[in-house]
Length: 114
Image 1 (cartoon, rainbow, N blue to C red):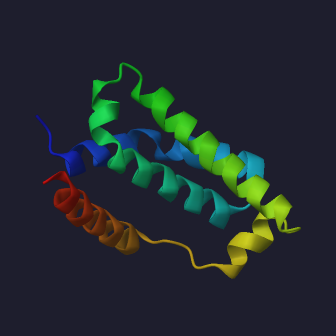
Image 2: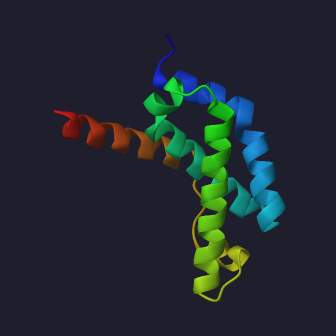
Image 3: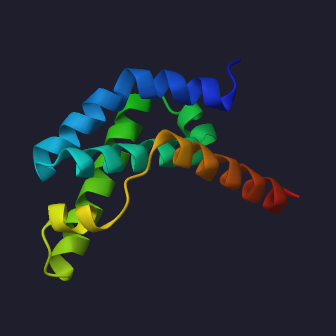
């Protein structure tokens, strides 16, 4: 059985481009699409046990991507911003930041499981 990180790497390699393309199609901004893809795979990592039990990994990941796309679009509208304006004001997550968030989540999840 693969470790959680190996499984996430496999899913990322397989579905990242598809998630990115969907986000880019809606938002028309590379930075926004990258951020949504990063949020999607972070959510996949947090729910990896649930996804492994699922028969439709791709469906779960794409549904999560749609959620993050809509969340960003709606929150931008509420603030009177375009999606692009919102993301250009914030820092983009890089792979190092994602890894730090994963480590932080594992420590949190480990402490709350006991």
